[in-house]
Image (cartoon, rainbow, N blue to C red; front, side, top):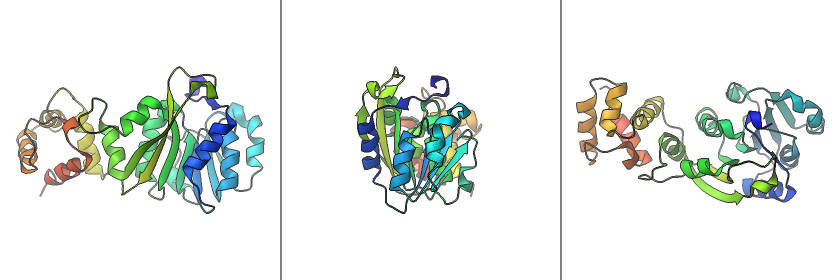
Length: 253
């Protein structure tokens, strides 16, 4: 299963802890990506109204008959980065998962953007990813994903996880990350600005934008000055909400 970027949880105490961290209500609709052998899915089925369980590895089908026996579980076979998540019915209100580490960041960003019905995430990720998504401005690990997550959510490290609880044992540290939605995802113009701003980290933000938008240098510097920021500020110096303000100022009139 390592080839698919997922390690199976083998500790029932941790599974119970994840469920407690999720704080599910009886009417919650849960999206779980990376079902594995279904040990978390079974707990989610008892705690929530409905579970959308997504798994890419058809080789696990014989082990998941116990999951499909639950009438409130829909098992979706496929790549979660390609499935039409917005078409899931009923619409998910929470994401609870041991995410495949290879797609954890883009999957979190995708669910924030495409599933406005989701209000909270309780996800197992690589510790490095948990630290990056909740990094503060000015940090060397603060980047485009940090900004886009923090524009829509409060991010909190809920607990670190011993590699010994996985099978096979991963070579990286893991953590449970909690997100609570505080607003909508960034609009397309702001998302494009954020990605362009961080595309050349050694350059100033305005210079980085110039690579993506030739002829924009003077306008970007003027907009930064209007926001009370240095004209040569780098992207990592801006707080998430300052990117929204900058995108607004750079919109064509």
